[in-house]
Amino acid sequence: MISHIKIHKGIIATIDYELKQRIKKSGGSVLSLANDRIVLES
Figure 1 (cartoon, helix red, strand yellow):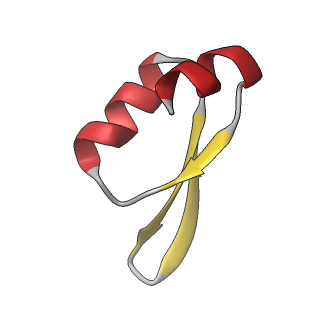
Figure 2 (tube, rainbow, N blue to C red):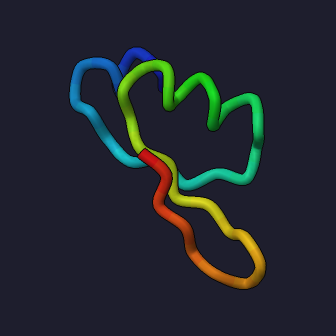
Figure 3 (cartoon, helix red, strand yellow):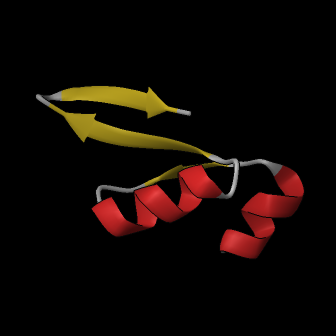
């Protein structure tokens, strides 16, 4: 999945902290839930 993000610069939805950090390092964006809201982290 991380290799796909590096190539296509996609957005992934997850609540896994470690996966979010790896996605951000790869240049992708993350959709997650925080305080009953959907948050886009780039």
